[in-house]
Image (cartoon, rainbow, N blue to C red):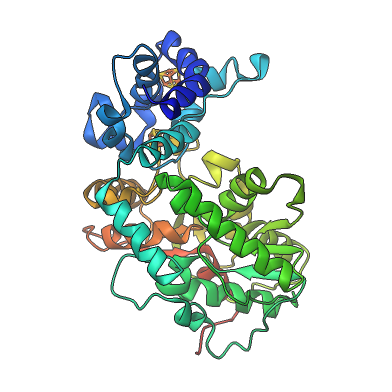
Length: 400
Ligand code: SF4
Ligand code: SF4
């Protein structure tokens, strides 16, 4: 066993034994990947059990690295796990499968084991200093602000709007809606001088040092333009800025991170943003894993939807909600696009069963696979971002 492997096992053995000894395996029924593959080695249980086997010298990282591709880091298993549900408060223990998956992937990269798709992703990212979003759109630093054309947005200031890569290069209507909403509500904000990827995807795929480079660059840019407050609309950025960055920078990290959907609910509640135009749609809401399951944020988006005149909102079942995932997170769409597509298909099928015409999401990363699958239903389902639908109701149609 290498020294890095030994260090890893020492760090994760207690968590692994906590899971291994309970034997409940409740997590398997809510894991979106396991539901599709039905493969025992892709279960959250196996992810923990492997650590026990590694400690005993029965398995090595080479044996198991590929299995850990099969995770969207949605957090459903952590919520469902009895270790979190029943004993968490008492023993101050919460199952941390998401962090474990990240740690195994990092161990694999450290040990020179690479997954082909993720390796290509990192190479492309190095070349272009931003995120190589899958598809044919031009991705580079020269194009990172193209989405803001004609909006007359300043650079710098106390409040920065951080635009995630999928929004900047692919679904540009989302950041445009975000900017127009802030302008309409009188919120002053600027953009970064040079924005790089938040680093979240690199961290999720195990490229830990690369993720820190992104973070260092972005934090330096925030400081250089006098930023104190960062507004984010992408739940993945929100995780990076509230969990990863504080762990990299410690006490020096003193930025206020504002989640757009929470700010939005407040702007509507206080009358700073008026939703005056009826939107005659029947919608349901897709809980982004990183908001609901990972951060417990589920009320604000519902409050916003209920404030839109003309809209009929059909909520999903709150209990089964923890297994709904678009399949787009954790790098799965890069390594196993077939699985992402099937997870998305199941999600839109469930939404379609509610008799809605629109699935509203507050996670820009989920929107590409959900849109693709929503279009294939017998009764096609349109996928809209919460910000897009709010912009419509506020009379902020985009005229670039
Ligand atoms: S992660 Fe939790 S639910 Fe899953 S097998 Fe381990 S203890 Fe059981
Ligand atoms: S985080 Fe989500 S995808 Fe990953 S093992 Fe847990 S339930 Fe499965």
